[in-house]
Length: 136
Image (cartoon, rainbow, N blue to C red):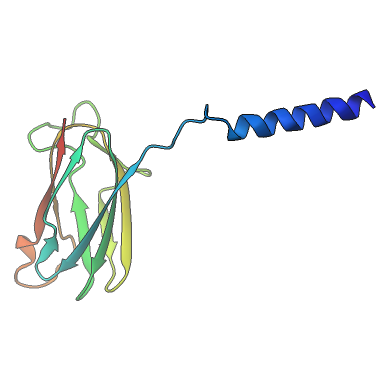
């Protein structure tokens, strides 16, 4: 009988601990919807605050494109670790036609991070680029 009471007390205590206000909230995600089409990303400039978890939802509307983003900010070199933190760490993604691709990372360091199309898409391919700006 004592054992049953102890188990019930433990169960009630655990349920109370799970629903109490002491739980820490998960960090908020900034969702940015984008499109990729010959020869542009919309939006082509993105601004986020340092420390933000960013979720890019990109849809290629006309054909397959790519999305390659610099992990280190312009002019920063590659010392001290990347400014954009992906899990797993990568910088190049395929964007299949009419499919939404979700790319998630944490913007850990302030700076400018250029991105561009990494799948040849025609004569204007080299101009298909944009910029992620991480602000303090």
